Image 1 (cartoon, rainbow, N blue to C red):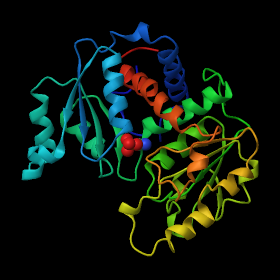
Image 2 (image 1 turned 180 degrees about the vertical axis):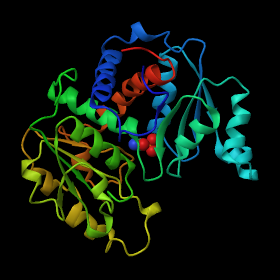
Image 3 (image 1 turned 30 degrees about the vertical axis):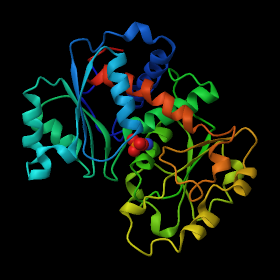
Image 4 (image 1 turned 90 degrees about the vertical axis):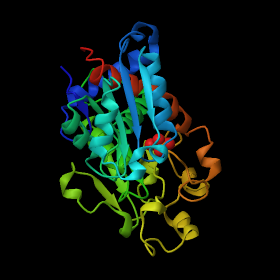
Length: 311
Ligand code: CP
């Protein structure tokens, strides 16, 4: 049986991850077969940090599985009057909630809520820790593009993927490092020295680059990350134009990629900073496909964690 919480990719068995990816694919090809998995169930969408894609896709996924969403708006809630996180959620539980999707600025908030409530919990992004459903939809999108079979081990063997940009503050990067290496990909990380991951020893082996140009021509995919200026101290990068020049996925840099290589970005995009508009909107960009596939990856996770669906 699937665990009652999906808070991190780290520590999950590759077989579990592959079955979630295969299930995402089934959700996309035959959505009608899963339309009652959450019938009679209510999922609390507990977003205490801003979100567009993750929140809308979890709400849509809940509805497509026949469940009901209860939305939570932090600015108009009693959290703003000093109520604690645990008290707030325990109040909400009295309305008959069967599972919680949580986004929070603090690392570990999803595990805290799971322990405090005993309810199934799904992490929709906690601080700079993990964003496991984003990694799932990213891998699903790449697998779909490359036509891989997730039921076979090592689906991404012989694939080279670079994650480029503000790695330090990126929960997306942390989840993807675990997932993409579990699928057999050769992973390359590239960031300015001030924006690398400080605790790389906790991760599987990866290749590290200071600048993207040496690795980019060999990559099958480049995932560029949002520069998270709201989480940075001043002086971390010289200036936005210099960041773009040295680490941005510019039109010139994209020309050096293999003809069949693809580009991902989890969004939201800072156009003209980490990626040029022409590149983000080009034929090799999977950015909107990632958004679309987020619904199916989240359906797979909701069905497993809240719907208790067997494989
Ligand atoms: N990728 C991502 O988490 O986007 P949102 O912040 O819009 O949910």
